[in-house]
Length: 305
Image 1 (tube, rainbow, N blue to C red):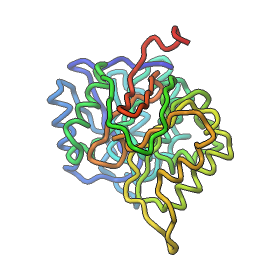
Image 2 (cartoon, helix red, strand yellow; image 1 turned 120 degrees about the horizontal axis):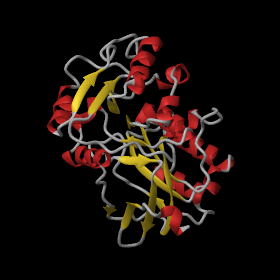
Image 3 (cartoon, helix red, strand yellow; image 1 turned 30 degrees about the vertical axis):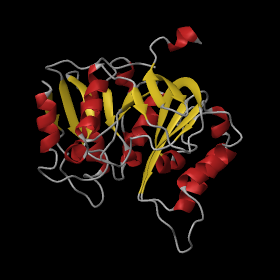
Image 4 (cartoon, rainbow, N blue to C red; image 1 turned 120 degrees about the vertical axis):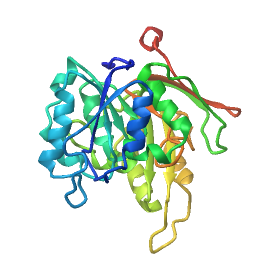
């Protein structure tokens, strides 16, 4: 995997809106935060556009992201928000220059589309807070994004959930929003899941939808190919007309019970105020014991295999 250069003071970050719309002023806190890190900030021409549920037309959203990709001075691209729309523009964008000049792309939720696309091109990216969410997440979340961007990400240690499956594994970290991963099954740039540590999270889904999506991962063979599963926040889960008998943990454990892989619940990343940044495409070691959970970057991964 190609790793973009870590940031230094004076580097330029460009903010774009490839999915849902944002209002004027809603990105001010993020801009101020980036400036306080010693970075320069540019806002895409159409960032504040609105066209129904989109941040402007497909053409204009693609234009801003393409310009940020092509701009030699831009070292990182921060998405303004998720929502919906990335899938409509992904094929309008030429990502090829990133293979010779990779740069960080940051976001989550709908931005999972771009995480998958970049991973298919062999380029790392960051699952983390977006510009609109900066005021609503914890300082720890913002610091974790800073650490990933500046090359000082540390080991994440957690108190274990009683529902975790114990074990350890090593592999590249991939994933994102479960609904997006499910909707991207079969696209040309779908993740290669073999040997990977898969991270998933979701928001405002019906329990039976989670069941259906996990059944897809089971029957397609994805769960038999991954080395570990990290379940982030599953926020606002709800019942349909009929009550679903079981929790998210029950659903996931039922489809992973036959596989000897660690399964971690309540990982602090997703649609909550604690949204820990992760580097997709990076090599991690995941350990789950009765006493603790740890996730750490391992630079010498390939030498150890």
